[in-house]
Image 1 (cartoon, rainbow over the protein chains, first blue to last red):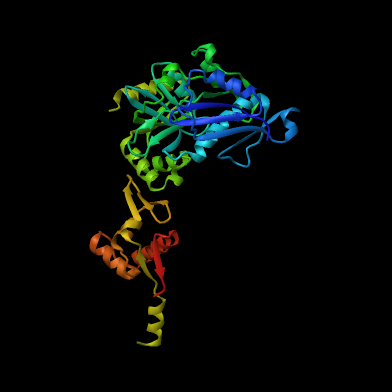
Image 2: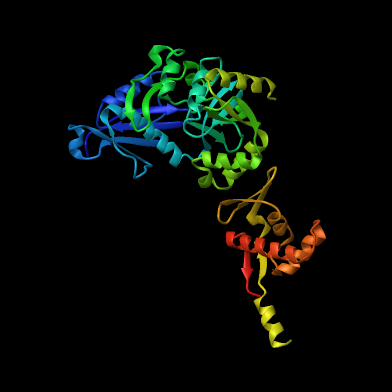
Length: 289
Length: 104
């Protein structure tokens, strides 16, 4: 087996080891995760491996295959220039397939006054961009990919990974976030243009602090601004679809999710601009208990 | 018992529910959620399926006996339509594995 470089990262409650035959993606990770503490001991929850898909691919048109404790057979290899994306995708994959300590919701979350706003929706709904934008306007960023619902307390645990900005969202965030918080721009990835944004320092330093869920939104970009009530049955079904480990958690997942649906006020939110969304969110937030 | 009556009685299916502890019930606004512990599957049921499960127990019952129990507990009209609906829902619940069906 080829010699591997490695880096260990602690993100919220999860500790990762990223091992790679190439230095470049790990150097990029080290720079972007410079404000994060390393794991407190040598134990990690997951290992992600970045390896060539064929031995000669280490040197000739290098192409990165994502491996690790959990993996999917159909994840295509990426060019070495997108090694950082491969590492991030690998970490997502480990969480999605392997994490059992929380109910995982594919959602972004931000916090204010100890209460969490959770936003979930399909890719392109704007949940990631909205969380990144709110993080620049007085909210604490908790995560743009997974909201971790505590099975016992019902709180949301932060998982403030790098924010994955895509396409137009890159330009929008460059107008409000400091230039030294951005990673390299990767063009023509399987998800379009991608650039990572390091969360604000406060979000990283407070990544051990959970928050009570106070409002759940289903944002939808590109429609006239509107807030709509949703039935509990629809909310429950959509959250099971948004969860990567609901089935695996069995009864504990059922109890956590039914309690969440009972307790957390929920709206569908249509919007056409970030400004509209911020207005709608503030109007709901000021009225939420 | 005549041959014909005998054949009819043997062809009437009977249904029974599993142990009460197998299910965790949770009411949503318009539906009922049931978590089935033995399979780990979450079911979302619309009326009248939850009511059928409520009046059943681990004893074998025909659809007609279940209909009688339903009428005693809930405001259910009696009639051929009602019997058909109840039979259809029982067959669905049996297909989901939430109740057992046995030939009479």
